Image (cartoon, rainbow, N blue to C red; front, side, top):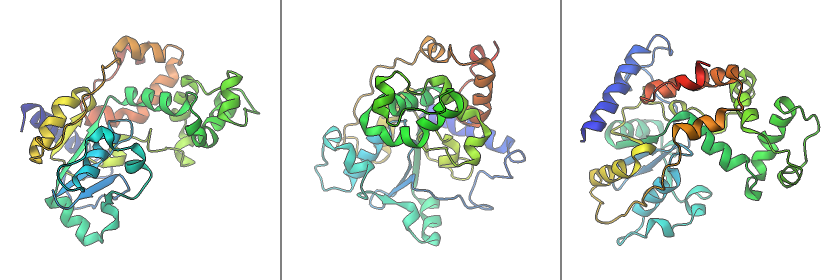
Length: 288
């Protein structure tokens, strides 16, 4: 295991231990509390792998890996696997479909991994993907976009469709999105979609001891290390990551129209993700 992985895992253990009292007595093991297993845990019984997927953190590619491993050798080229094969169908196996005793055995004995990224950058990616104009994301506009416009965009009668909102220049803004996420009512009303739900809540890293914690920022290196762990590095080629445009200036540009108070509320919502996964507090955005 690389030194990078050792340091990430040690940091996570330290943070979990320091937060036991603050976060309902969670332990860094499965001894005293069983994690809730959602649809985000994908399992492969041949290679004995469990992957907790986090939307907007290379999850399409990693689902493609899990899909490919279910096929016969030679494995298909990952890029050739359509997203619909891994996102919209039940062609993958999910841990939650197993009986509870079997789930617990798999969690203790299978190799477990997840990938995370800077929490604010992940939110920018989610907003760009779901609320910039795309016909295929009409449901996001209906479920969340119109709500954001009504409550935070001063539009009591928002456009009926995303197409109308796009044509009239009345799509939700990133500032609307940030205010939505920082509003306690969003949580109370069950409006935390997995695309912006906190990473620690999706994957419960203080209850599940992961064997590899990948970061989007070091995706290529972490992917290669993981494929070597599975002994498939010669059988599968992980697609190279795109050029990273998420510089700090890029992040600041997205947040420049967001009021300071709303930035701070947003950080409060995602602070645990920053702390657990070793991302620095964005002081320049939060300290005025």
